[in-house]
Image (cartoon, rainbow, N blue to C red; front, side):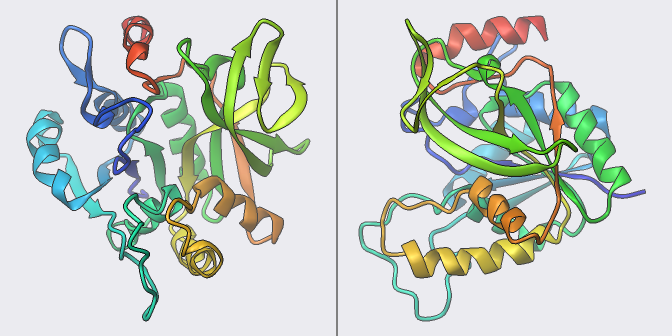
Length: 285
């Protein structure tokens, strides 16, 4: 039987939230959202957890997170640093202080994962259905990748705008592209995005960075990261986004990505004011 790994991207700072939201706790028992993810993943058949973090966060994660996970669970840590996978001779900008983005985060776990895996954000609650569907997909497939999507209207914060990747799929539920919309919000006239003049219905499938990958993704991410650095490496704020990397692979016909759908409730902590909303959803989980 294949060993399934869960990669949790937890190196980001969460600037809009205002703190280290990966370790924020919720509910009477004080669980983090990534603890919910780990437990849902274990129930779905995942046997190994890999946290992608900044090196200075490892002691804190071992004390605050790993110590609370089920005994005997295999846990590893991948460090996302600014110099990881930089080509020889590449000079970092002195203004560069933030990580290179989600595509780079996954790449940083290359040496720790040999088989199929799921990659998720640390600060989202996805619900058990996503892990069940992803686990079954990875057990049934050896070459293709997948993305679990949610309806846009079910992923909006009540406290401000959100960034979402709106997905385009074909009649076979194969992913064609993911287009980033950095500012989507509810208004009196409905859902609007700064990225388009067209109104949004709320039924659009969106990516929340729940990916089911074969290990072959690492070599392609490495190649794309080199291209990204050539084009944007001097921009101190540019990020190597995972959805863009996957969309590029699809456009070049290098892979097939299946769009799986979850109807579970989703929530995340984009803003500090989201706490009450998140806890109300977790109470019903």
